[in-house]
Image 1 (cartoon, rainbow, N blue to C red):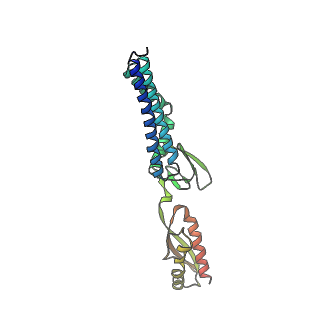
Image 2 (cartoon, one colour):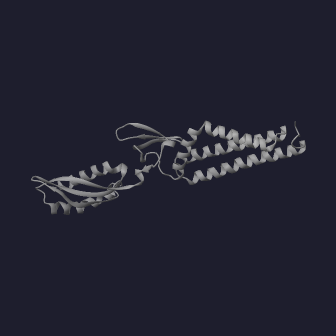
Image 3 (cartoon, rainbow, N blue to C red):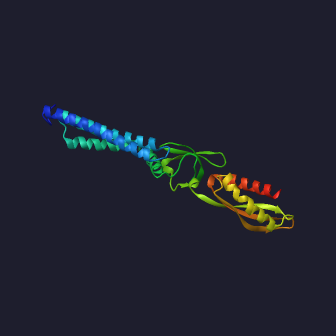
Amino acid sequence: MIGLLLPIKYAIIVSVVLLLTYFSVVGLVGLVTYRISKENNHSLSRDVYKHWHYIICTYVTMFLILVEVAIWLGILPTGIISLFFIVSIIIRYSFIRKTRDFHSIYWIVKNNKCEVNDYISVDNYSGKIIKMNIYQIELLDLTGNYTFLRGASIDNIINNSKNVYDIKINVVISNDKLIDKVKELLEKELPSLVKDYPIILEGPNFDGVADINKDSYTIILSTKVKYEDIDKAKAVIQTKVMEVLSK
């Protein structure tokens, strides 16, 4: 059947052209995906774009091999192209679950929505990202439980680590310390916390008094911190207040 579709000499020439085309396409795809991965700072970017490179090169290789077979065995191009798309559909639906997972993680990486060690919320799940690959994310929640989220199940992701939160801190002060004096001391001493503790992004500011009781009253302080630093910031500020008022 050799030469049925094309004379042998033309079949050889076309085969060489297809071979050169193959290496050109694979090289171009590799260069483009490499540059994209270099421009993206996400820790998974190289894995994701290597995966894209693998997928594209696999389909290019499959198509060129089928075309080569068509040339040498005399199969009509329309038949081989149809076969290519049938095989492609079979491959896609055989791995459709993995494909959906990958596509979801791909868009997370592309848009740089989250990284390992970020605190995220996804539907009914929230926690710190412990591990992340091109198919799933592993979360550790505040109670110490681990959750694996498939890429396809990740919708409406909120990266709490990218947001800055306004928090209020209540500190109980005994009535033997005058409010005006406490305010004066804190407004003088607390601003130094921003320099000493980078987790505190602003303030702390004295916002007033909440409750006044027989033996004590509660002062309100405010600051801005990232989500994962809320508890640390509260502890630091409360400790500093106690130190200042104990002098």
